[in-house]
Image (cartoon, rainbow, N blue to C red):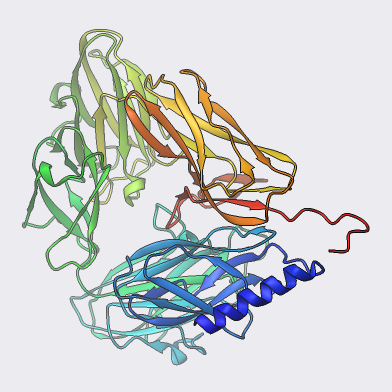
Length: 564
């Protein structure tokens, strides 16, 4: 590995010294396979354009090393046993700049590779051991990947696909067939993203075939199945019990919470329960990872400031509304068409509250609305959704009085899967910093500017200081003091005339003195938009923002007559 890295470095230095060949900004479209088992060595294909090869990689993961191979775009990755599990960001870079960030996932599980041909039921790839994680790729238009699994009556098959959330240009589908080729189950979207989850209870023992295919994302006028070298996916298949949600759907940092759970493919909640101690919640955490007995995948639970209640029926009418305190949260379900759940709050005049429903964000097919009524039933405030699929209301009580908070379903559906968590909090001042760009370039002797956007909420009026860490020699960025009400800061990047070439990570820190807090400005990888009505961007990803930003200091342009 040392020899090959030395060769790559020497080659790069040689090209730079010639001053003739320029390394282009690399283009990294995808990584295949998208996941590697911890403690193994894996050949990984970088899908994109790299001129020259080998490229350089920003792969800042403890316990992970890599080396290029003689095949352009292929690297050998070594993952130590102590490497941390989870999704990480990888980028390719050169003296000219850095690629877009992509993902590499480290898993404790054995990773299987898709084996072609597997387009049809007779040629389906056999998954002999479950649970299984398979790395595949829909490489060309019309591609379908098939996997055969042996199932017993009474088991529940749970299959989950990651493609959209890996930034693949796919709107993927999972379909389950019996050996005759008859469809018995399918799923297109899993509410939170375009990636599907299929949960199906087996009635008849036998061999079944799970098929993966997809349509183009963003959508186009071509209705055929889509594929390309960028069509990377991960397929998770299990017959073990998999917990879908806890009950209640959150835990409290103030009081202990007794938690049961519901499994995929099962409508009822377990008779078992776990006591989640308030002292076990990490300070400042907004979610808590809970291990469920005999379930390999932990549940991520929302964390609230007050008691976590469970809905008590009947609560449809104002007279039967369930009383809640402030702060608190309640988990409920709209179990029949037209159902509305009401909760009673006693508020002080001028008291600001934040009311939030989590439903689609937790993976439930509930399109919820949220309303506040006075004692006579008059509507005072309402929200269907706020920049997402779940409703939020920031509301101030006009009088000292009792009010009703109502949750309903826009689609008028009912059932045990129409679940939600309503939280009622007294909002605390908070602020955050974000960037519209993740990378900048500078020429020696010139300047550039970047804007830091500051989001302040609930009275977070305080002075802030914005500064840059990790600057190379020859580059200066002065700290910027921001007034109490300002919502942006402009940084000026100044490169000395003799600034040396540089391509590497930097961070932008924003700090306050009262209270003493430091945050890194983050660049969001998720986005949402439309082009002529066609959805664009990725609303949900395995990594949704980064604070490891990038600065490139270019070489000084050649001067005519310079013989260097």
